Image (cartoon, rainbow, N blue to C red; front, side, top):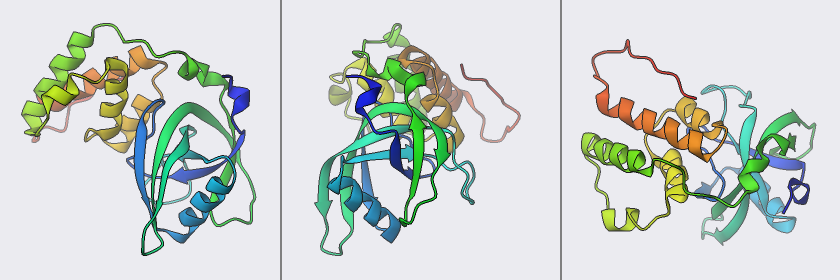
Length: 211
């Protein structure tokens, strides 16, 4: 399947602290009127929505790289809100926003920089580093983990799941999203987990750089 299969004009959903990655699933509770309209229109058409992060806590500016998602589960609640699940397809570069009369925002996007996302996923190298770093992270954060389930998740899925769900800042998650490929994303993820384990909460002088 090529990038030409996917629409180059999509509704966009800016959501801070949240990223969507290819081959991963993101559950969303939709309650704002503009995003309820967005979901309804998407379901009438092709079910595609673009997830982006805002640049700051306030304002309309968004990061230029996001991920296209397809609604794979849809449930209307008694209060007319929606529960949906988005399946990540491939990342995109924001070309520009459109002037539209819908309550939600729409944009033209370009998938060509991220065609690697359409390749058959392969297990990244040095998966033992991922497992080690995650165990240390879990111990540091005192998380409750069902390890038997974790060990059954293919490593290429696990990388994206952890990137989306661990307690990283919005900028850190954006860096993970923008990693060139799965291997680089795993390396950056391991770095972030190692830093979370090593950091002193009383020392704000630490800095690092992701690939």
